[in-house]
Image (cartoon, rainbow over all chains, first blue to last red; front, side):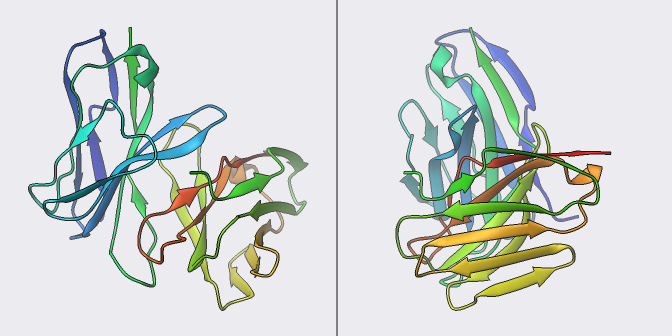
Length: 114
Length: 111
């Protein structure tokens, strides 16, 4: 089954404790992206990757890191989480094309930083 | 940067009625997509309309695009309670895969 998986689905942590949210897709998509969703603000892009070893900042990259060592995985790293990073996080993937393709979303990770 | 803006922010209708949501955007686009999100879950792609298309249908969905007005509308006909969700438009201004999402329209369909 074609899917994007994220782990963990729920996470409560404390300020400053490094964490990683994993994202994996099985569709051989070149493009992967991380979004955060906050009430009243919609989805905002954090980072994206057009292919292995190619990553770029989105609209709200501060406080986040990513890596793309393999095509299927795109982990999101919070080196020193702060309460303002409490949010619902989504990973998404798609093909890269000048005609563009639909993005497939993971189920989301609800992060609370206390 | 927020590209698409949906209108209305919230819409409440009865089952069987039609629901219309609008999206306006600021810059030229390659295509526009609509997504649905059930409460707290991942977004699901509904339909894509290219900049050279004016109207597209998929089941009970009808999407229109007016590039001169930089706007799109999503019509859901004969709504069902299961259509209750948030609906987002997304544009790809750069012609590649990066999408910019609006803030969404929350649709409530009552039985």
